[in-house]
Every structure is written in C-alpha cells, then in structure tokens.
Amino acid sequence: MSRVTKISLKLSVILFISAVLISCGDPTMESTVVTSEDQPDQESWDITITMTDEGLKRVVVTAGHLEKYNERLFIYLDNNVEADFFDLEERHTTRLISDRAEIDEKANYMRALHNVIVESDSGITLFTDTLSWDHDAELIYTDDSVMITTKQNDTLYGVGFESDLLMNRWRILNPSGVTSRIND
Image (tube, rainbow, N blue to C red):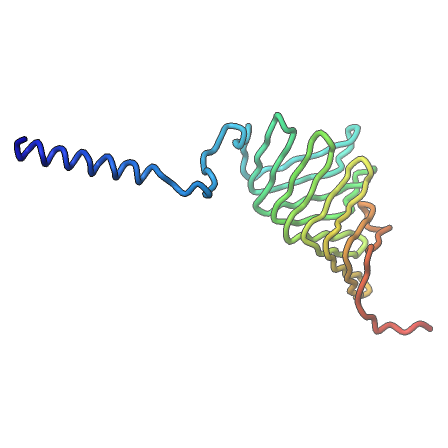
C-alpha cells in the first residue's frame, strides 16, 4: 500500500469516527425539532381584539403579540396584554393587565398569566399570578394567592378569589391577614 493510500485510509477512518461521535447525542435530551403542529396558523403584532355578545362590546383586548391556532381554536397573547371589560350598556367596568393570556375560543374562556392586575372602576384592585374569565358565567376567578386593595385603603390577602366582572360581588375563598379597624 502506498503512503498516500495509507493517509487517505486513516483520514477516512478519522472522518467516519468523528461523524459517528457527532451524530450520537444524549438520549435524555429533548428534541428541538419543531413540527407544523407547534406553529401558529396566524401571527400578529400590536393587535386589538374586540369581543362582542349579541352585537354589544364586552371586551377589548390589546397585546404586543398574538399567535392563533385554528384547529385548536386557541389564541396565545403576550407582550403587555390589556383587557378592558364593559357591561351590557357598553360602559367600562374593569381593566385587566398581565404579561400573557390564553383564549379558548370554543369554550369562550380567557386566562391571564403572570403579574395579573385587575382594576375595577368601583375602586377595587386585585393582584394575583393567574386569573380566569368565564364569559358565559360572567365570572372571574383564581385558585392562586391574591392581594386586594380597596378605595378605603384596605389591603386584604388570601388564596382563591371569585367575582363578577364589575367586582361588586367578590370574595376571597381563604382569607388571611390582620386589620387595625375598630368596630364601633
């Protein structure tokens, strides 16, 4: 065998072994392959969505980014999500702010996620990490920790919360805290 053939053979063996070693990965690592099922059907930036009920404006949602999945009837929002809620006379009642939100179009259901703040026009402000809105039941609720402030400068804490959209009839499911109020 000539010297050039020996070098070519060694080089081929080294390249083959290198290719095999490179292609062998850690079997415990998750795949980063993205399938078409993971991709949104539509994507938009700086959006405004108006939700109506029998022609009446009920919610106006704005966000910096939207992903829509047609088959799942699902919308994902992020980048400064804001939702303004309106009563049956189309009067503003409540404003919700969160980092992200998910809308299930089939169930008519929205969930706000991370740094959720709800400010009612009646003077109640709710702070929590997740909040769900059931459009059909006209109810907002969470199972997470909550903090509520009132226009009377009360601060209330607890776990779990439910309310009407106006935040006129609300309750903390497991309240906790201390008050300095004196009953007369």
